[in-house]
Image (cartoon, rainbow, N blue to C red; front, side, top):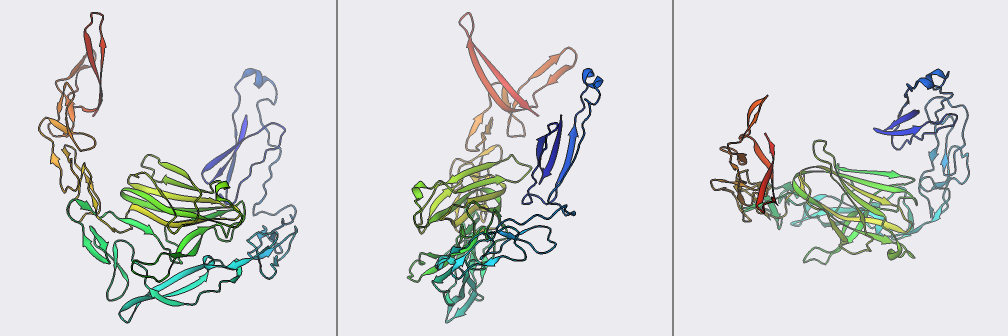
Length: 502
């Protein structure tokens, strides 16, 4: 009865030990660099066991650890796809566009032949495909005024370093194009050309900041419809298995702006090209909702020649996890259906999410010939966003002037209409229901509290011969359940059960 426990990133890994048998516990360096290993033994108290010499003891005959920074007993050859330098403590994966097809490779791996490419850790090179627009990323460098028009200097760079393609579409030359639209809740300055935030309670309409009328709220939205070549601070990427880049920016030819015929290039998030088969890419987006919100995103898949989308199982999962320790846990998980390319993509929207901090997690499992594209991501209720419309207040809420969120009616008040800037007080002798849309009378034997918006028991006292009289009149009602049954004389008896709280 003994066990070994290895703590990996706060998660225990338990292995039962069997006498005379070897037990192996794998500690993965992708999870944690340091692990605490402990042995536990529960001594038996049975008298019959204690009388047998040695039966109440446990012996650790040997203990060996591999992969530590201490001196090794022998040198191990690096497997194919990896190499090492002299006196190395660990093998390294071959860099991109190099390979090693034998074990024990020293110093460096072999470069791929011309027009061939390889991902890190490759044992062989593959023929490279011709470059397309999807192999580049687009960058808009600020805004400057040219002849009364704000333009941005647009350049293209390879999506991977080193590139994973050769030939085909050459790198597009730099150009000047109209500046991309400002984010919701911001407007472009007529003097500097930069985007400036609107005041709280204002929304953007035609590039102008306008106030929301009474009874509506300028709820903030954080919208990603195009990505710069720098990662947002709340984005984190990781990779399990060989990969060059788990996620990368990819140039996407979007629909022209209304009233324009000029081509428009934006960056979307993509995963697949920089992954080896069997690898997994994870994208985690940290968000904080200051009011009830939702998450909406658009996506599609790109399928290579010979890949049938109808015969391909889902490769991507989406999760929403609440990270606040002070609130009830919330975890949503959805397997995203395969979707072929369209300009807008397939849309997914979560149910309403309460106030709190969340992690949005996209997990893509690499499948040969398939790429996952995150076209757009909108988080409604995110504090760092801006408003692009005024949302009407629904029943049970009110919206004062220049607000960025609806407020629930206070206890003892109600509201039965939309677009209201105030709530009504409940009539005398009633209290507001949990939705704050109606006022209800108290259950039998209860009356509204003198000052609080809840019901209390009327003249309710409980007598006990040891503890005296308890006055329950000051207790508030949480729930009342009424029941009835028919007595032997045919009379109907009504009973009520109350759950009370102070």
